[in-house]
Length: 262
Image (cartoon, rainbow, N blue to C red; front, side, top):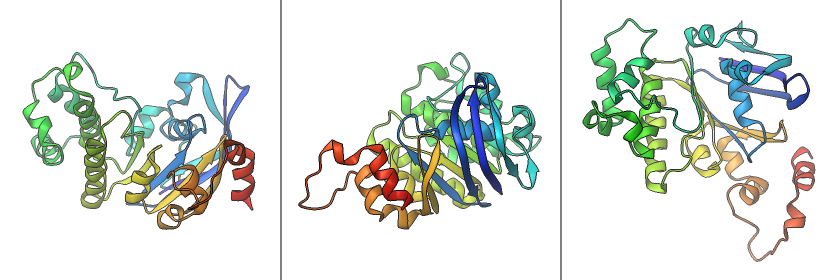
């Protein structure tokens, strides 16, 4: 469904952020994109959704295709019309509007049964039904995360781009959010590209995963294999080799990159 081929991204035509990133998201599948802060994960999503232009960035090499249509030169509004929706990091609700108005915003391109769409979102997040007329800016962090996910669901996207859906949430609530993401994917057959620092949670729901460092994909494999990879266990799951102590010098970027590429 989605194919990124050797994509290079620069900001201000000077700052190289992505250097030859290639990845694929099959139809109806969940793919995880892992990496530390500053590795380029969010830039990948913005390159797909067309939001780079708002930050003076652009795709300077390579290509991005969605259902065989090249999209890396398209405007964000045209990309949305193709069925790609991004849930931006940081719970970007429309603070002065109600929960209902926020959800309606997600359905602005649709001409279907709005009541059925509300019922669908409420089945995933019953709390939003209770808060239907509440002002979005006064919701808790977890409720706002439910709202931005529900707003994306209202659009019935073919591909959903999720940027750090568990950021700042308590572990129990984070698990609930990931359970709902997995359920929505299963029931609606919506493909998803999930950017997440919580590698354990992301790999638990994904079919395939990619690991990024410094603007490059350094490792990709089925999620089950990634979760069992010794380097991923050590650097992202906090599981070192039993009985073996390691200093920070031994886990520098160049060392693990050398191991991964080998």
